Length: 258
Image: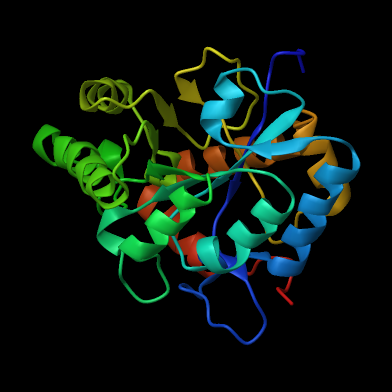
């Protein structure tokens, strides 16, 4: 990894024993990291002298650091992740699905303002969390523009970053995001990023991610996650998206959340 490159980590909901998660199928749970593991990862970054930061900070050249980003806007963002992040002196970017704000298990408008007050960053994760590459131009515009407008009304600040649901993007998505006023579009393509990046690679932190693998990911050693993505992309192209999505919902994930 070049000295000016950075890694953007992707988290979803965090799991707390006794607290139900927003989803329960295998496709959802394989990306649910235990709160215990998350605390260990934050502690590790502090111990090696690295910082967890927002996307905006990384694009401005903050090093050594990794971007801590969260998709969906679940309630554990404010209840679990934010306290640990702030106690460590870190920051993070939270990509929120606008239509899920106020729903069970998700952030409320007051929660969004609380995150901003803590110095954390809000991005958009679309209006309804649909596959953006499978909808028409009018719906695509609504997903990107209306989600941005709603979030900005709630937090009173510009929303500059967009994360594609399921990582699905196209030239049309990128063009519409620029038209809406987003500075970046985050995908699920595994890789590192340069400070001038507009279309971002990210690396998921999964339920099974060990601390040793987490360490390799943060330093840009991405052979394992790239291989996993290559295999899954190949499977998706063979069986088709609907069949692939069904398989993901029912194929067990390897690590049981504590």
